[in-house]
Length: 149
Image (cartoon, rainbow, N blue to C red; front, side, top):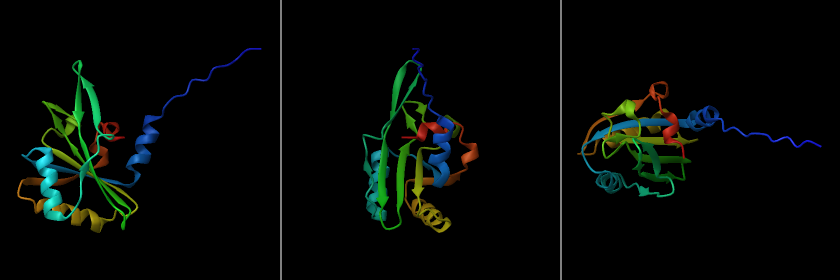
């Protein structure tokens, strides 16, 4: 009797497609530390972003680990989740194709509408530290898998 071993392969492309099926990603330029930016967002918009250490992203580059904190806020009424990523850590970038972007604001969930996107963009533009807010098109994100958790 021969026992066959099956190798399980993780389909990253399928996972990425599922993750991005109901997502909007905003790029933010703001010369401010992530905790100060998060404080401004919470204080001025009555959100309640909190750092989630379980979601912190770690990338290994140049023989060392780089850590990218993730802040989260959930709107239970709209079934919408907001995630705020710091795009930089000690000269390395979470999404290197967007080196000019300091923060990534990801909206995910059933409550994601064009109106919600526009409201969020206007809300972010109202912060003093923000120079630019743009919607990042999924097709232009080369390293989508880096945002998965």
